[in-house]
Amino acid sequence: MPGLEINFSEAKIQQIAVTEIRNEFPETYGCFYHVPNGGYRDKKTASILKGQGVVPGIQDLHFIWFGKLYLIEVKEHEGYVSAEQKVIHAQHKVHGLDTYIFRTSEQIIYFVRYIIQGKSLDGFKRFISPYSIAENVEMYRKELEALKIKRLQKRAA
Image 1 (cartoon, rainbow, N blue to C red):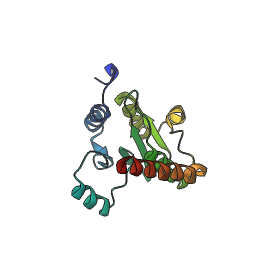
Image 2 (image 1 turned 135 degrees about the vertical axis):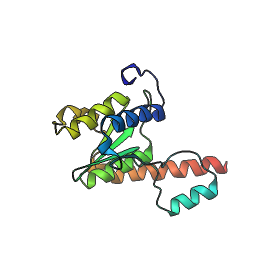
Image 3 (image 1 turned 60 degrees about the horizontal axis):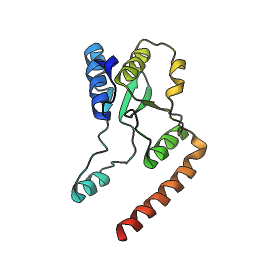
């Protein structure tokens, strides 16, 4: 039940939301979907997927509704936005798209319901990613590059 979530994983939050939305709004099928960019893979599979266009940090859920794209990042209660996600959130804002961060399936369900019903999304402004700032995209890219260098140095040590 969406209202009883305490410390669900991101996957569980997302699964509950998608199931509820598909049941309540079957017309969203194909318009509300998950982008499976995460997860652990062997090096060969990761290389193939990267070549096919997988981009680390892409939002978990995309919702296309009457000519608009809504980007949703799902985070568990204590989840944080990665360096890769900061870049993506800012890059998408460059193109006029906000990323919404939700921590419960109930929040996601209400968001989609409001969009479908044509209600104002003003109440959801507080869920817009704090990294959804176009002017910061270069700063986040530099942070990500520094982090990548640090990771490589750590592996080499």
